[in-house]
Length: 350
Image (cartoon, rainbow, N blue to C red; front, side, top):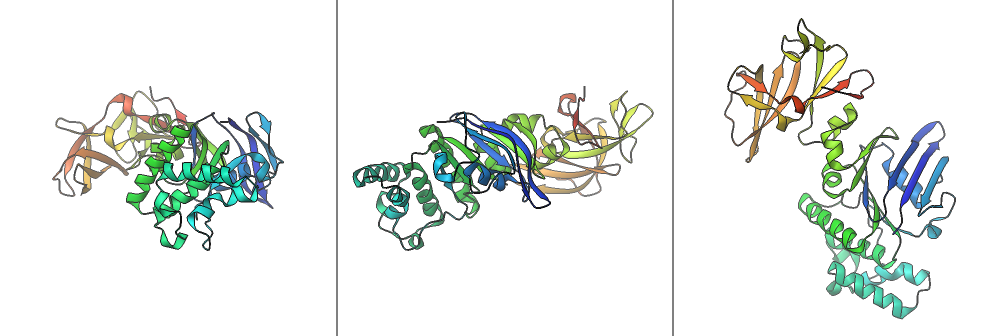
């Protein structure tokens, strides 16, 4: 399976820059996720890799070969679309093997590949059905089977689970990841869903406004976000971001006298805290006021206020605190993330 290398790839539609000099590498046999909000350029980037859009500049290399100017059939890849793109008038078997028929693969070989893919995905009893007779999850498996029988070097997936309900999405996430590992596929997967990215990816390419915001493993992006955007986009509930000011003894939370970084400046900086890192303090702690509590069963999410800033606390079990209650909060020094308010870039907190 090939390595995919994207070098300063750009796509412009008139005056609009959809992809702005994006660079990243998908290692051989790995699953990389293009993650970001709607309009960030992730699907356009995938379409450029597939050859469905023409690059304005930059290069796409597959296994060291420059494929930037090649048509889609010459790139040796398979693609699974959000809509599944199944032919409604063909049965499951023909939907799976249609591409092989077009490429004039011998019938015996088509049947061999069909049988292998159907067994792998549990489709043996559905081969005579039409797409309208299938559930969403079954249609997704047919689309995956079509990609498998192509025996392509690279598989591209464009938000393949967005049409499924939450429970089925969870099941299909596991199936796709297990399938990718079992077959050793190199896979580039597009989603706006951070849970999909965090649970499936070997590496995440986080995009914003057509540019790469950060590239790394899920643990790297979660544990050490490079920007305010990365910090706020990953995490459920998201990281709390508190504006800081200068105080007499160091940085204080805006609108308060609560010193959070003794001996350090606060103006122009933002403090980041993951909700699970903040704990209720029996002693003094940092004084905060409870604004609301959401009980979720295994834990409770507290919305609190320090000065003019809000922060979230993720506490275990049921927390029975009324709005307006003053409490103490604390967090370990190693849980602090610090950012420059102007550039949005991470700065060292220590």
